[in-house]
Amino acid sequence: MSDPSKATPEPEPFRVPDGDLDDLASTLAKTMAEVRQHGVILDRLGSEPVSTPQPTADASTTDAVDADKADAPASVFILALGGEAYAVELAALSDWVNYLFLPVYGREISTTRPWCGQWHEHPEAVARLHALWLAWQQLTDAEAGLSGPSTWHRDHLDQALVHLRAPDGPFAACTTSPTRPNHRVLATPAPELTGATQ
Image (cartoon, rainbow, N blue to C red; front, side, top):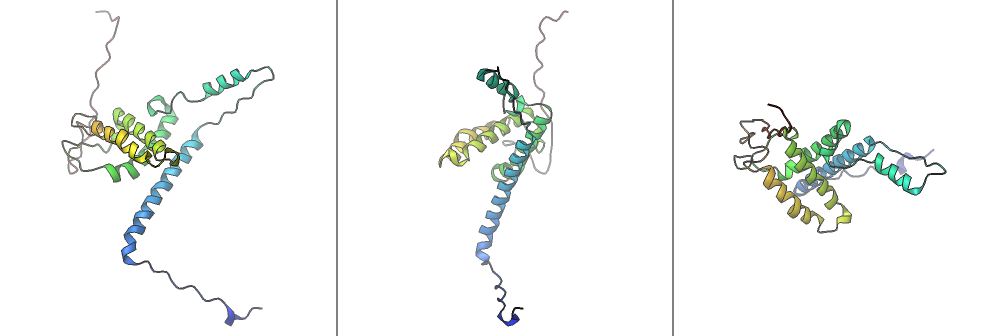
């Protein structure tokens, strides 16, 4: 039996200086956003079907490669996806837009910079935000190098914001004031019917 008088003392409580709390809160918020993003990516990867083609003894390598290409999605772009794949990708995109993009790059809503809280109902906005997110994933990866984030800002973010938040952009008929939310998807030109009889 151990002697209670020789027990190790409880450690002293740790106190963070008040000046460091803002840095700690900022670091925690960034870490939580990264964890959410990793969760989104893991969910997306977990929802993709895994196909393992079983080559036959007489199948050539070319046939196996062709089978792999047939099973793989034609594109990772959200507009090329359908059904459940589209829904999963839109949910992942929504997390990125809501937890990273808007808090950092949202800026004030005005008539010269409209925004719509229901952006996911605007096909052009979904397409542009998804393309922006794909580029962000690639250019903020460690393999992109130290200038990757700068390249993303210059080549992708700045251009996307110019088009998304333009007065005649996809949100032109939507919110121009945070106090007066509005949502309306603009009509697109109807395709011309060829060979129609009169």
